[in-house]
Length: 246
Image 1: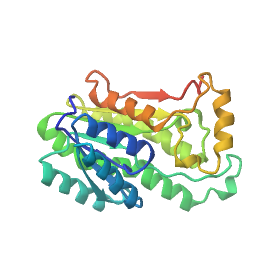
Image 2: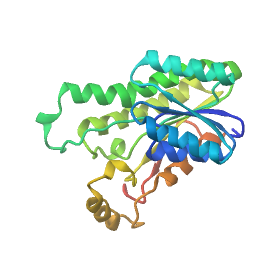
Image 3: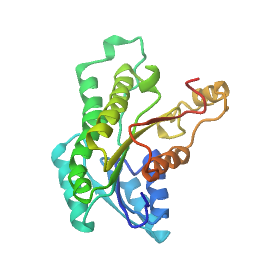
């Protein structure tokens, strides 16, 4: 899929990987819908940067955990631009709970992470698919994690949600073929605000990685754009981790 003039929704587009992806998409000539839930200031700054560079973008507030809010957002985007060509399912949350601390893994933690990370992604897919089916084309990228491959992450529920995303990606790729492609990126450690306060741990980890570096948000954004544009790739989970899982 060529990205110029295509309408792409990026959830969680105000910060981190979402921000980097939105900016790279706009630079290709795509029209970028920058979704946010709490990061309004950051989302508006992304749109401002896009417009300053001559691109086209706008911000829209919606909690992806709410199917009603997602449906309203997608209807607004399609109403303004006629359709939606691509979806980057990036919005995600976590909980920092030691892997061996089962007592802190409450029903509330399970529900909140699954509602955003898994059900939220499905809400977005379900909302955009009718437009993609109508035009017989579309591409979706879901942001997973190496935690969904290794089982090791910020918490057991977080790792479980990311594993679910990888499996859902494969299921959707089968269900939506041949006109809609669905893929996933599984990043390793990425230098974003999630590491705030743990920079020393991040640097220690980098020294143990084969490539001796931590990925940047731009690294992951480049992988997202590859999956959006490569017409022969569907149902794949690409690991981008500097050798972390070797």
